[in-house]
Length: 281
Picture 1: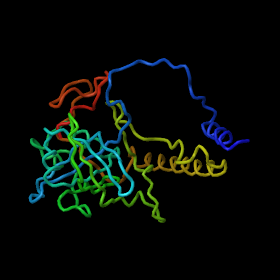
Picture 2: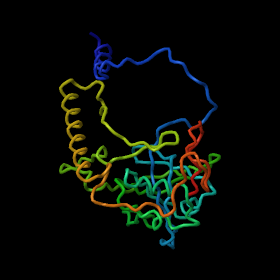
Picture 3: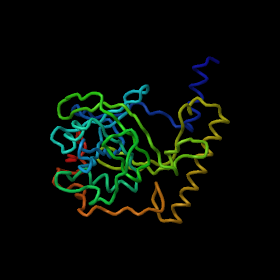
């Protein structure tokens, strides 16, 4: 049997017999940002020379663009309050969001730092970030990436901030005794076409489709066992995921209800949209 035929069979076996559908009906839509899901991140920044002037913005357009050196990008509208802070300071911190931080992240996406102290209103705190002169990290985030801006590109509706990652920190409860990072334990969330959704069951791992059967079985059994243990622990503590033992206050100002308009525009109407809700940041 040829290698590609053998690997094809292994991949189909790994998929538990699920057949890839064919002959599907599709609906053509106008060009849009239909790439979903995307990560939910809180970007924290501050004014150079006045570090007390800090803000956190919710960003949907964020991603990895290079491995060596590690580089990321975020896209922000020019009219946003934080755009000036990012441009003036030349640095920012990307904070990953778990279920505990989600309400704060949503709040930071629909309220402007021009009008409210977001940390105070949403119940989170800032802390120093390694390699950053001004930009703070957000306390309690599963992981934070300190980033220095290398280039700003005007794209149209948004400016893209291309940055090099100069420091990374991960919450200690997500790192095992061997130094391996386990973000699958963090209770992370994603933004999926207007909706926040939790990341759940582990379906595979990198290289899973062509791994030896014994390796695949062992690894997947480990993930399943860990997941059941975490469910049991959450049931004991009443937590839904992510960090334990810490209560996060809800925003003082409530977020707009689904389908209703807040200051920033319509939130999750259920209809097709080409971009996330109008984050004021």
